[in-house]
Length: 305
Image (cartoon, rainbow, N blue to C red; front, top):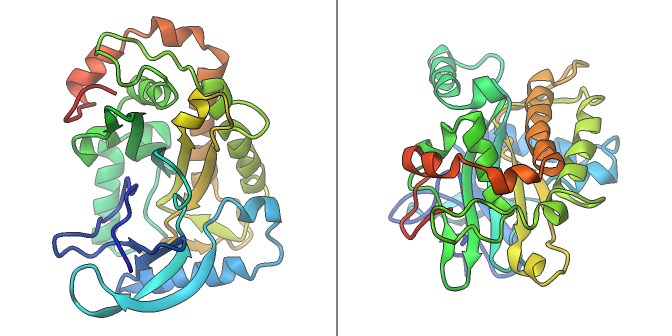
């Protein structure tokens, strides 16, 4: 039995006659194939990448497992449609906090139609993609069993954050008091276990960065880093299962022997933000940006971040 994913934070969501991804109860994620060249391009990438023996195992773990394509009943009621069959990245997670970070200051691929280039360029300029080299595409932060999740009121509010507001959001992502009253400053209680350590987010990002400094097989346009962990495990002193995955490969192109500077530059910028939170933890207690950010960009139906 296929259903709408519980923890999708970006992209087109299924429901209400809309086409979107579905999941089953055995850990598979079904992503509708886009009807134009984007769908064929994503299948081509997964097929190439999954059979590429030059990709080391410690890098393939950052990509969803690929199980081919399959015809399934589409979520928009249009009947059987082709879908990518991928790993459901949140399948065995309990109340995960998730953030989707679109990497790169340029989000359109080579040889894209001019109207598409202009559409992407406009959005890159209006969001943090150009100034920061990445933008937050979506977030879902678990607060508590009582308060549930914090989510942005709309997509645009979280994609247009300033550098200071992005840092604030990344602090709230790993704070124990994210569900407290609005004047509370993020305490970054879980920063050291989620972002830091030999298996934390920063270590994984640096591992990915080292590969991008060498690999010239692929150029990843409009691709995201999905970042997730489980706050309840962290609260109990257990491993929070902090993990990153790369997702969305409809615009991957051949590298042709050239380093992917667009993705690498954005990745380095994002790494700097995470590093600064770990190296200046005292800023969490002294952060005075929370109130302004809530008023201008970060809203929720049931309270603050």
